[in-house]
Image 1: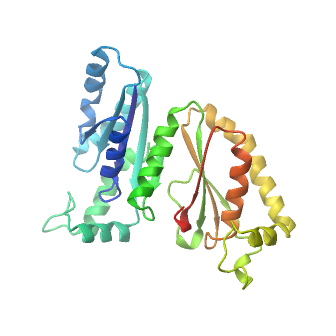
Image 2 (image 1 turned 180 degrees about the vertical axis):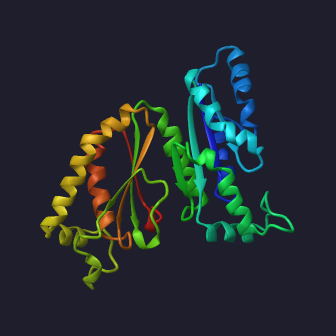
Length: 286
């Protein structure tokens, strides 16, 4: 049996994530009190044997505070009972969440005449701390379209059913914020920057001209070798610790040249060593 718990602040995409899981064969329940989970699992197990039983549960601010506080111990007990349980926490930057509520004209579940939207979002964040603290995967949906979010959930959850740990290599720009879903972060801002070459400014790290520029500097190869050595040494330990997914984020200033180039190189190397390697260039929406 496999259980996926989807949580996060309102407006972050929880409903879309649950809908995707339902589309790929999960039985989905939204807003079931976590205190009822053990009884639900027991009833499912009492039914006639069914291969690959998959459940997905949405947990948000509508759950009772006491239920949310109990969630970590409930999840631990389920895992001890042999249930494969993954906790995914979705979030987004507050200006993005405010804009989404403005566009949809929906009311936040914690807002009222005395509590405006920003206060409700902050209260919700605090309320969900017990869930976010134990999340196996945190996804920042600030820059994701609905299609991109569904693809990411599909790749990292459905793809995570194989025995091989899923590894996501992600490029990003520090000036746009550090990704909250990163497990490991490497900073490339010390490398020569192609941005200052006028002929390269509008290109990306996927273009040959940018790659040739970076390869012409010995420190690029040294940085690549150091990152590769670290990952070769420690990714097997991550996998042995029963992790289903690891997000490795490579950052430069704008997330357009150096980080993109390095991610492309690392994906080529580690795709030969691991069975489920994914790639994302955050600032390019790819």
